[in-house]
Amino acid sequence: MSDINSIITNAEIFRSRRKTVALQIAEDGHLIVRAPLRCSNKDIIGFIEKSEKWIQTHTARVLEHNRELEQLEPFTGQDIRDMAQRALEVIPERVKYYADMLGVTYGRITIRNQRTKWGSCTSNGNLNFNCLLMATPAEVMDSVIVHELCHRLHMNHSNGFYASIYRVFPDYDKWNKWLKDNGGLLIKRMTAGSNK
Image (cartoon, rainbow, N blue to C red):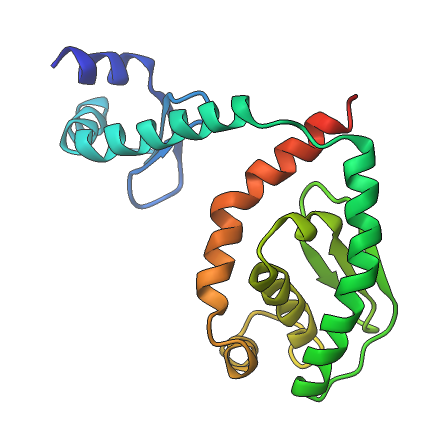
């Protein structure tokens, strides 16, 4: 029980007007607990003890992710400029291809080295894409392009929006998950490289 006792001792507990207890592993590997206002410490400890296997599995993933980060070479300023130039050559062609399939129009295409977004679509149809898409599989780039173009049909994330995506890109969920799982590593590499 020494491991679980250490986890409980180092856990950060936040209470709010929520209805259930939720666990999260922080980037440094410690446990964050979000609990209802009236949830007792005894109940929280019991929940943590019952969730020991989940905590160990997800802590191991976070720590492995951190080890991967330490081994990654940061992108240099030249790397980022090269990706931006390549994106200017590749992305407009893919945008046109999928816009024709969807039957939508679009405005200006801008390539940026963003730290939070992979793409965006303005209300008047201008499209922005992250140059880091050049460091992902082509299917990931296409999934982001289709996502943004579908906002020309639905400026929301409704069922209709996703139906439009799946109509032209059935594997969207697979490649969107790839981006969620790996995109953070690419962003970290860019952030580190920009400081050099």
